[in-house]
Amino acid sequence: MIKILIVDDSFAARMYLANLLDDQDCFLHFAGDGKEALDKIKTYNPDLMIIDLLMPEMDGTEVLKRLRSINIAPYTIVLSADIQEPTQKRCLELGANAFLAKPVNKQVLTDQIQLLLKNNL
Image 1 (tube, rainbow, N blue to C red):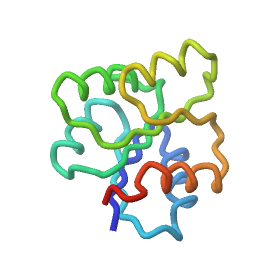
Image 2: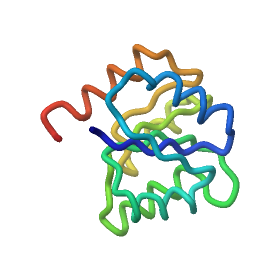
Image 3: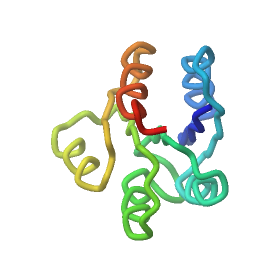
Image 4: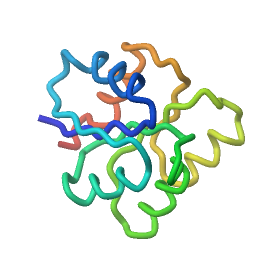
């Protein structure tokens, strides 16, 4: 069973993603900001993280920077309403594996997860 960490400051967004993944064979963990996400990554070692960019305390790009500096790297999908090319490019340079626009479609999200995890678990 894959472990997925959903990181978003919006409870509604976290539950929306949880509902999209309800029929997948996965165990979900949740974090409401970047600091909590780093703690959960160290504690639960998720296979994949789905993260928003704009959050209080520590934003998604800072999480990516810190993961890179400590060599802890779950597969990462960034979800954001800011779909400008420089934003996407920056996230991918910082180690994100995929960038998807909010609101995300269930099929697009599950296809991306399968693509990232295929043959890696």
